[in-house]
Image 1 (cartoon, rainbow, N blue to C red):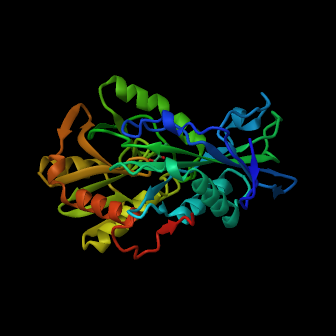
Image 2 (cartoon, rainbow, N blue to C red):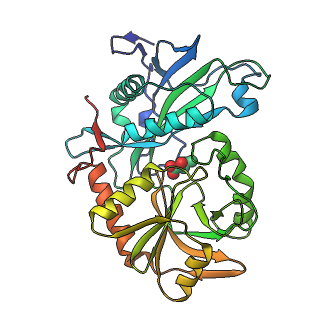
Image 3 (tube, rainbow, N blue to C red):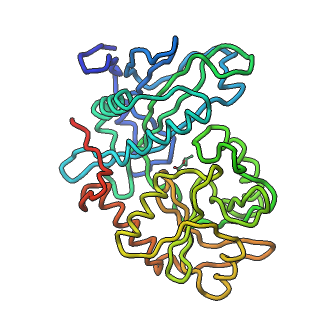
Length: 357
Ligand code: COI
């Protein structure tokens, strides 16, 4: 390994693994780029960051995040424009949410310059890993976790922050079937549902598996008090088009503050569609379907961007939704968002950050 003179001390991988990758058949989250960014927190401060070859880490069996889940992550994407420049989509919005999650989980704030420098340098080094195939991108996974080797319950005094990246294709290859969850909850008001806390995802696994055993791909989470209002769908925020209005549950402490959610709402408004953020009752959605007024339903998240819902199961009945091809709002918004992210449409909200190569 050689150490070179990039801003952040960098150990380059001796050989790249890129020739082993079939960029036309990328499975989400399985292929990792050559390098990762890493910085440790101790003695009340972030230490010197470094970029190193992607690889295993050695941890104490007492590492506190393994025991008590003091861990968070983020998800964001980078694209190549037609000139080969690398465009990061809304990195500062992700950093803002990362720091909100950190606050909720009693973890230290990550400074903007550290985050942006780390991203820039990592992407500069692994620029060839950003795919250009239609529908592909480089998924970027920042993650922060407690590293004290101490099994007493308290906020850790030490942390590690990493950024790893993986070239990805589509997250779902077809519209999903979802079922309204009548029993389990993802988060209650006052919980950590708005944060990207690792434990939120662990607790969602069993309910999701149970729904999958019944033949559904994902579930629709409902509120913790009454199971009456829609919260999210699977690992995504959820939206509906009822009577030509784009409707989505308003943000609360139990709903993830999705960056894609925010981007979809903004683009829909920019395109002239009516948007409502409010409580959405399950009954309202089902009644709208019965009356032929439910035109569209979809999840929004960084991984899938827009994941179309083909069918909603509720209380013993499957409700089919209109064909995806005819869904005007989600298709138009997805197309417009894709153009913005890849530099083919004006970036009127300053969402795109060009990496200086
Ligand atoms: C996202 O879609 O943004 C997610 O967080 C899903 C991820 C857990 C794979």
